[in-house]
Image (cartoon, rainbow over all chains, first blue to last red; front, side, top):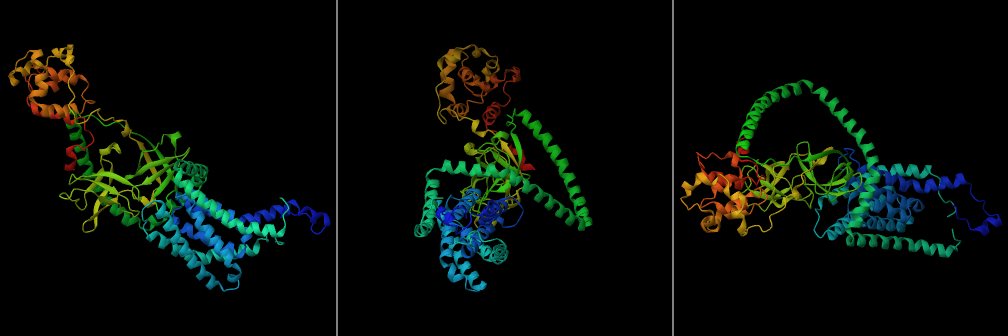
Length: 188
Length: 397
C-alpha cells in the first residue's frame, strides 16, 4: 500500500515498498474490476453469442458477489459503482439502476462474508441464487418504475436463471485467480 | 494520503457504501431529470468503444462465415438441387418482374407520375447490441460524419429494421421495430387497411388500431405508411401472422436478433411541408384572373363543353367558388404540386375544372380534341401530389 503513515517509516517498522511491488499490488487490486469491465464490453459486442445481453448481468453479479465475499479489497464500493454505471451506459438502461442494484448486492455480500466463508460451495451458491433473484427483481421493478410501464417479466426470470447457472464456472475461475494473485494489502 | 487514525479509517470505510449508494441514487435522479446529459454520456461511451467493438465484430463474423461454409459442405448436393429448383422458379418470377416493371413505367409516364426523391444511404456494420435487457436497439459504426442523422431509416438486407434515435461522433443507435417503445404506422397491402405496429420486446411486433370492419389477413404483406410524415411509404416490413385468434402480429422480414449490416437511408420526409391551411378554401386572389396567364390557349376548346360565357371577367369568381366548390377544395389543398400556375389559371375557366388543369401543361393540349375525359384528367392532377400510396398496380404482383 502506498499510504504508509510517515511516522511508522521513521520508526523503521515497515520498509516503504518498492515501485515494482506497489505496481504489482495495484494491478492485483484492479484486476477483478478490470476483468469485469472487459467482460461487459465484450459481451455487448455482436459476438453472435445467444442471449449475451441476458447473460451480462449474471456474469457481473457473479463476479461482484464472489470478490465481495472473498476479497472485498479487490472489489471496493467505488469500483462496483463504476462497473454498474458502465453497464448502464453501454446497455442504454436508465442510468444508475444497475449501479444501485450491484452496490446493494456488494453490501450484502460484504456484510455476510465471514459467515459465508465457512460454508460449503453449495450453500454459497444457494445464497447467491436467492440474492441474484432479488437483484433481478429489483432491477425489473426499478426499470418499470422509471419508464412508467410494466416491463415484460420473462427477461428478468431468464436473467436470474442464467446468473445462477453461470456462477459455478465463474466461481471456479475466480477461486483460481484469487489464489494466484498476491493479496493487495496483506497488512490491512 | 493523509494520515488518519485506524478508528477514523474504519468509520470512513463504513460510510463508503452508503455514500456510493447515495451517488447511485443521485445518478438515477439526474438521468431522469436531464435526458440530454444521459444521451451525451451514452454516446460518448459508445464512441470510445466503437473501434474496439468493430475489432471484435470482424473476426466474429469471419468465424461465423467459416462455420457456415463448413456446414454447407456437408449438405452440398441437396443444397444444389434445392437451389436449382429455386432458380427455375425465380427465373419465372424474373420475367414477371421485368414485364411488370415495364408496364409500371409506361403507366407512370402516362400518368405523369411524380417520382419519389431518390434517397441517399450509407451502409454500416452493427458493432454492438445497445439494447440491454428491456429494450431492443443496435449500435452501428457510422455517425453524423458519414451522413447518419436522427430520424433516418435503417433497412436490413430484406426489410425494415428500425430508426436512428441517437447519434454520437462515430456511431449511431438504432431503435429496432420490436422495441417496447417503437410505434410504426403501417399499411396492409392486401386488405388496404392501416394500423400501428407496436413493439413488445418479443420477436414479432403486434398490430394495433386497425379498423374493426377490416381485419388484417393472415399472410398479407405489411409495408410502412407515409402518413404522419414519419417514414416513406412502401418499405417492406414483414407479413401478418395470427399468433392467437384476434391478435395479429407481424413476422418481420429482417432477422432482428442477427443483424450484422444495416443500410441507413435519409429519405428527407420531414422536408415535405404541409399546406398553410389544410382543408380550407383560400380565396383566389382577385388580380390573378386578369394576369397574362389568363389568355392561355386551354380555354378555347372547352368553351363548348361548359356552355358558359367566355368573358374572363365574368367567369372569375363565379366559376371557381360557385359551380364546383368540392373539386376546387380538393385542388386547393395541394398547392405545392400544382406549379403555382394553378391559382392563376383557375379563375378563368367558365364552369368545369378539367380544362383548368390542362392549362398547366399547355403542351399536352390538343385543341381539336378537347378534354376527352375531363373528369379523369381532373382526378389525375389531384392524385399526383400523393405519391405516398403504392401505385394500384402492385396488387397484381
